[in-house]
Length: 228
Image (tube, rainbow, N blue to C red):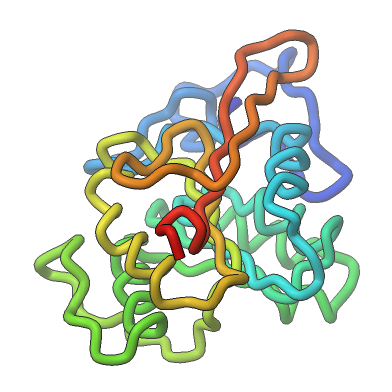
């Protein structure tokens, strides 16, 4: 999967017969410029459904997706699981523009007010969330140049979805654990494929793509993972 197989909730497409342009930034396997923290591909919609069910996403939840790509996890959480608010964080301009386009395509105007794309390095937003989770926490350790994110309108999350490369998860782990410690018992982190290394998930689930494709593992972390 690249990022050209998804046109929004209920309209995912099969582009197997479509000839891909070499310079298409959304095509399968197109690595983004710079040091990418996430794989260069989107998750299939059926797998997203399983992930959101695994996370028990409900209308009470504020869902964040770090490295959100074209925003498909946020859009599905909003439209099909009724999430209260959704925030997708993505550094790549082409994907942010696609996410914004899909938001504008939503038929329900009220839903557009409950979802947003944040165009920046996810480490900046993580630093902001650390400050929300624990007043007085020192500046985040994930990026020396990372000052507190300048948008104080970002809500506190109850669900944080991560589909990041293992070395990226390791880089962020200290601050992710701060979120688990600082937010209340309703907060949970969902890792797709690669999980945290220093604590154990509260639960996990192995899922396979439809048609017997490759399997992946979801891991859920909450206060129980910290022994709290």
